[in-house]
Amino acid sequence: MSSSGPTAQESQVIATARRAREAAALLAPLPRTARDAALDAVADALTARSAEVIEANERDVARARSAGTPDGIVDRLTLTEQRIAAIAADVRDVVRLPDPVGEVVRGSTLPNGLELRQVRVPLGVVGIIYEARPNVTVDAAALCLKSGNAVLLRGSSSAYASNTALVAVVRDALVGAGLPADAVQLVPGESRDSVRELMTARGLVDVLIPRGGASLIQTVVSESTVPVIETGTGNCHVYVDASADLDMAVEILVNSKAQRPSVCNAAETVLVHADVAGAFLPRALAALTSAGVTVHGDEAWRKAGAEAGIEVAAATDEDWSLEYLSYDIAAAVVPDLDAAVAHVRRWTSGHTEAIVTRDTAAARRFVSRMDSAAVMVNASTRFTDGAQFGFGAEIGISTQKLHARGPMGLPELTSTTYVVTGDGHTRG
Image (tube, rainbow, N blue to C red):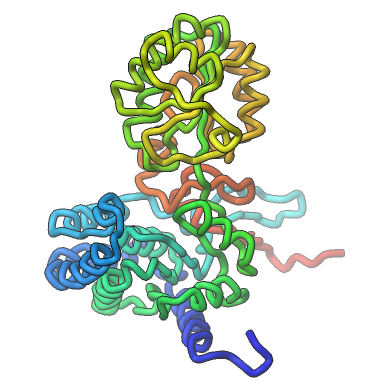
């Protein structure tokens, strides 16, 4: 903020955050029944008002096409009646999830007779900064409401009309259900100034959660004065150990890479123990090529590719560090498990790593030496997901180490309060 005072944009963002803080104070003590009824009303309203949401979305889609936006991103931006129905169904799924607020994390009676309970409470005001996909607008709002939080939503300018329409529907539904409309707000403005104001609204916003590409996440982490839960990029690894079942290894590798390559839990690097490289590489190359994957490999992979008539690009340090989010994978042969661990620890983003092995001791060594949010043993990296973990829904996948790590469900959207009950106790 300059010495000449706040700009009009800054004033709007701060005013929005202040309203969210007031709404959070009203929302926190409400019983689960009130919050669930509001979410049911949101789901009903989304279905009933889908036509106006689609009309707004069509403006965003037309603008994106005019700007030459790639078809894949346009598809993620597009809302249809069927997609809105699916979003509404997701809201109803959130209603059925257990309520984290009020859960006793631990409790005891102290020797002096004081009763001690650590109880889950809402975080307060949660800011979400995200890209492109308007479905995130409703998903984030539903999860924050369910956990008793007010939410400030800052989507990308490419989805501004869609997000504005969706938030209007949600706010009207909240009012109809007796909840404060300001529990869900769209951060005003389409410029970067509004993002900067949100990131520096310390004292009004309790936590920020960025969802998007590496540059967005890094900007929020580096420039925010509000505490940030870092949802991470996914430079995920699959290591095929000497004792691996090679049929299993091929299936896990292809699923990890190609089942949906544009997401953060897709594998970006495969490492293979030298003892099985001769047998595994030709099979892996054939399977990956069949799935449309381009391999960026070390000398051993390039040699195997030449022998099989499959072109393998030369891997560089950029490949080892890259989150491709495409049908590309980096590949190397390593002399042993220790070398695989060293490679992963150097290049990982801390998201998900997998080992394929029949050796229990090797699996234990690998798991104990990883420093990532999730480690898979004989399973695809694609399982790092809130729904797959049985959490029902997630706000993102955290790669940090404080408070929340891995898929973030409802409990990760809460903090705790210690409630101490005495009977006239005083401290001597």
